Image (cartoon, rainbow, N blue to C red):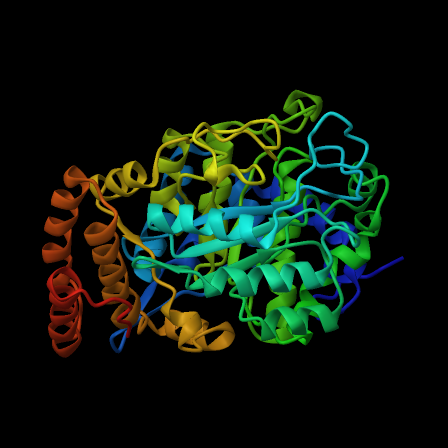
Length: 482
């Protein structure tokens, strides 16, 4: 019998089934204890002192109680608190990215993914380096600066050498004023040695979704292939950090198992990283199961409503206030709009989840990993964000300036990141507006640039940012950063 220990390196101890079930039971028992809920909400509120804003966050049990609460007034208070925390540390900036699918060859048997090895109807494809070049040029011509590369697990077709060569290719392409300045990587769990190679290749965040933290359910959903090994998969982030990657991204695929179990397991994983490595996850993603080739979400009986989904996002934001949160184009415009105000800080735009999809005139569906609900262009998404009062940010400065891991978190926790991220967001938005935007988007954006300059706290930073904006718009210069 395993005992719960967040500082353990054993998956069954830091993601402990008994602790998760006990946390759920305790939350259910206390869900009507409004006094205790008020205490937890008060603890989680941002505190402003000596010009700095800090948050204590919540334990997985405290957060579980908020999720279990059914009182409408308290639930509304949670939404308001999540929005307050989001604004305190991320302001009105929304980071933009796009996924790039390199290969759908895969040796795993995942029951929820169309790339699984027994799917004989999906066309298999792997991009050559020249095809990757064309995909990246297409993405640059939209205005993207940040990619997340994706590939199935296949040692023969997608070895680490292929991934490393692809990263090198992506970084080498400079088309017109375009450049990919940051490549995040979402590939299967691997060895410490391979993580070191990824670090040396200059990746940003290493992303790996747990899918489900319930071991029994996990093993059922992954009946064959290397991914069947629950411990190897769950302990991957520790190996990544041992290999020098200090920014990692967690996530579960909501709908595969009971959402309450997944929520608690996800926060326990974040607590584990903090306990062992001194820094929690850089990002948390919140995907839901979506239709795909041979995949019917209704076959999974753990689907969640949009309201529950929103509450999960809010509770994660309250529990881990400094962690970036990602929502993809799996979700509709309406769902994403709600999520932005209560916790989400990164979104994808104009995504295509098929191999080679960006060079196709019409959106290809035959090699998609999942259906895309939000199919707007990047220009449309950028304009939509600005109309909502958000700054679309294409910034990658922190990675390129070495502000990663605990250094990024230190800046975030003290609020000093406002003097970096806010002007950087404006300058990268200015690049997008100048090089790629439609006239309608440009008019709205230029007005936002002038308004938002006034919100930069330090006068000298504000002055320099204004000068850089002028050089971008009228001097042909690019890639300024604080």
